[in-house]
Structure formats: structure tokens, C-alpha cells
Image (cartoon, rainbow over all chains, first blue to last red; front, side):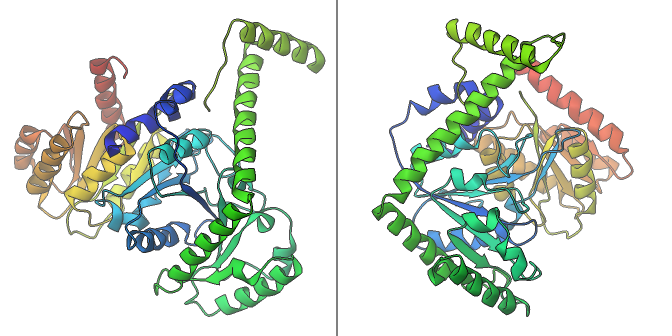
Length: 295
Length: 138
């Protein structure tokens, strides 16, 4: 698909999610390798993605990137600055980069992301890379969207106690210690090694990279690929994709419920009455054939 | 719901992007989604970014003195990509005498040094509004 057409379709889905089903059904099914990159602000997610694109392109495969940055909860404005790191790929016809604002969604993603990833898949890209908003400890939604989740860490992350905490440390398939040119990175690396043994994960799920010194990126990509292949072979990808469908559906239902709640007048005196009114409004809408959709 | 997307880009070789960042920040605070490309972009990189990001407006920040050549090239490439309907504004060190020429090659608006941010935001809003009226909101 031409980049211009693709870009316009993404805008349509982003602004008006109801159109997503009609748009998506025009294209034949195609499955890309969907890889998520998450981690705290400033650990080097965008720079690592830049190098990953470079490596994937040496093998003449096509790549789409969706990079999400936060929207202001006050003005709804956003400063989208991830693609700055990927500038060498701007004029490559086989690389498509799109910046998206979170538009109020929590969890490091944006509401339209499920449909946008689907659109990029059916557009025929070999790889779809998703970069989350810079996250904290509990944003695990990315793992509901992608085939393989990469958690990017950097020196200064904290000690091994941080690694024992639940949440984002649990969801990664691959842990990358970025900025490995910095002296403290070895400490983080060996702590992670100990953590992986404790968590019952494999050493194959850890690597270090330096986007600055351009080290280790090949290993990152090769490990991602090996993980993807083994997940594909043992049915993990299929299971994860079913889960993704369910989460996407949950998103849509939540939006529909929210819309129904917005139509309830605020004169409901208690929450139970509010629920009753909202549900009856929801049933009315549903009977009238308002399916909602997208989102 | 539609939120307008604006590309702020720095074509050419000058290495000062404080102005571009200040404008990008002001537009963010005015409720726009601002995509910032960073320093030293070629017109090709800027226009390809505009295509992929499907932006509603492009702002070029130029301090190098090459504003005529760079703006002209960007506008030519927009035509080549079939997105010449995306308006372009230019900010930076632009001699007053060059403004008519910039407008003539298709630049929508020129902001010189010292332009209050409120004026830039206001102008941006009216350029976008004009576009909405022309295309019937599409």
C-alpha cells in the first residue's frame, strides 16, 4: 500500500474508530511479526528501534513502526519526538514510521493501537514494531498486543529488589540492557542474569546493547527472531493472538459502556440506579443496531 | 474526534533548534499533536515524514539564510507526493525583503524573530480552520 494511503487510513481510524472494521475488511489477511518495545523514559527505546530497523533492512525485509508518546491530560496536546532517532529511515520506501499520541489511554498505548497494528499487518509488512510511552512499573498492556515483548533497561535502573517487583518485570520475553557502553551496565546485566534464573526464565532472554557504540543490536534481533520462531512453533503466538482479540474486544465494550454512561443524566441518586439506567440505555442502543466497533 | 497534527521541522544545516522547540512546545500547549523531526533534515526527509504522519500543517524553522531554496524545495516535493494541500509556514531569521518571495512560492505565513507565541498559535489556528472550511471538514 502507498504510504500516503496508509497514513490517511491510520488517521481515519485514530479519529473515528467506528470505521476500522470497514477499512480492515478490504484487505486480505496477513500476519507480521509484531514486536513491542517498552521501558522507562530515556532508556533508549527509539534509538534501539532505529538500529533494529537498520539490521532488519540489511535483509531486505519491510518494517512499520508505531511510536507512542503521551498526550497532555490538560490540553490534549502532545509532543511526538520518537522518530527523531529514526531519521536515517525516513526516505526508505520499505520503512513506515508513525507517531501516535496516547490520547488519554493508560497503560502506555493508545486506544486506536489494536486496529492500527492490524492495518499495518494486512498492509503486508514483515515486521511491525510498537514503541510504548515511557512507562513505570505496572504498564503491561503492551504484552496483550504483541507477539514478543522487549523490555529495554539501562544503567541506573536500581538494584535487584526492583527486579523482584511484580508488573512490567514479569511480562518481558526479552530483557535488553541498553547503553552497555556505560560502566554501570555490567552490574545491571549480572543482576538480571540472577533474576532470570530465579524467575525461571532462560539466559536466552537477556542481552545487552549499545545504540551509541552500535554494539549488540544483531544479537537483539536474532534473539527476538528465535523467540518468535519458538513461540510460533509451540502455539504461544496463536494463544497470544487470541488473547489480543479478547483484549481488543474488551476495549471496544468498555468504550461502548462509557458512551452509554455519558448519556445517563446525572440525576441518578445512587450508583445502582445509575448502572440500571446505563444498562437499559446500552440495551436500547444495541437493539437499534448500534454495534459500535473499532477503538 | 479530530486533533490536528503539526510537523515542526528544521531543514538545512544550521544547528540551533531552540526556536523550533519553543514553537513546538507552545503548539503542544495549545492542544495540537506536534511531531518534531530534529535538526538537519533534508527536504526529502521532511516531506516523507509529512506523508507518513499525515500532518495537517508543516512549520519550517530556518536560521541559515537558505530559506528561499529550502522552502521552495519542500513545496515542490509536497506537490510531487500529492500532498500540496498541506499548508507550510516558515519561522526563523527571515529578512523582511524575502517575505513576498516566500509567499509567492507557496508559503502560507512567515514568522520573524520576536513574533509572540500567542500570535503564532492564533495564525496556526486560522490556517487550519481555513483548511477545514475548504475541504468541508474532511
